[in-house]
Length: 445
Image (cartoon, rainbow, N blue to C red; front, side):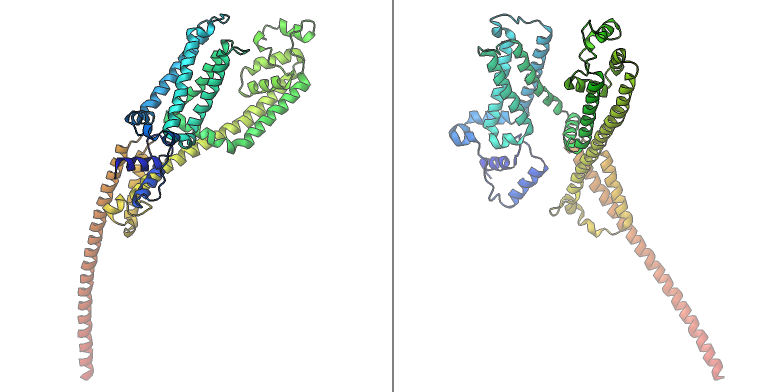
């Protein structure tokens, strides 16, 4: 098979365009090879249609290989880290906000550099993978949305209009900082937690709806009971009391039930137990001691009941997803042993496992498989998996040999008992013949 044909087959099953195949894609590739790869339509990108000569050139082949490689993703991750560092520098280092030529400053220039880097990254991936393969990855779609939004915000910054304040540059950097979370996604454990969280959201809609409804009811009751009591007006009694109260910090003034949005914010703070006793003391100061019961009931119902139910559901869903993931990986191991699409390596080495009928041997074989399951972890690499397969194969051979020895011993014991039984039977038959002969002789006399 030519190199071009191999590349075409690989691209046809490389659903995500990352230069690697998952199990389903590998099985599809095997099926195509077994069927002679007939009917496998080549996937052509828009660049292959527009400029086929350029795509076949050695320069683009090198660029395409680099874009699909792991090194390209590492470079983008490094750029994201630099973007995060720049955001921290802009946060703690003063910037000339009111300078008319501020967009020429080093921070603005660095922001433009990052914007162009991410635009080039998106264009290279679109040229290498094509629109269809690029859109199949949620990570690529997320990066594209953030990149386009960053470009729009950058244009608004440098274009003379009402949004050319350099402060918006920080917003652009902060928008690109959202992509920094993809670095955490590279950690398998963190990626599994994120994927599990996204997967359980549809199943937890009822609990989330109950939680939001409870917050809305509490906010509405708070507006009814405490609306307008938290204010800075010194001419009003409540404002004077709060101003004189040393236990009520100045930055707690927004925690009020004067409107629905502020009430929802207070409900969220009470839900996560964010200094809820300080908030309670403020409302107690202006409304009386009975206000404590309002916040205590809210704490018991919303935090101890509803929120804990939601957390318990999330933990249970995470444990179930973890168990399902391990079961799926172990199923892949078992499928590698037994196969489901015809003879596997296990069949080739050991023959048909259905020929083993001894319950003891099957129990021992299952014990070996359980041991292999216990040794299997998420960080097991291919060499470790091959080692487990070899150990499993050797153990099964030993078990079959032991089974053969047991069968031979049973057969030998059965034969010995049969010979002994035949000897005893023949002796008993001779004795019965002698006794019958004596009885017949006595009758003749």
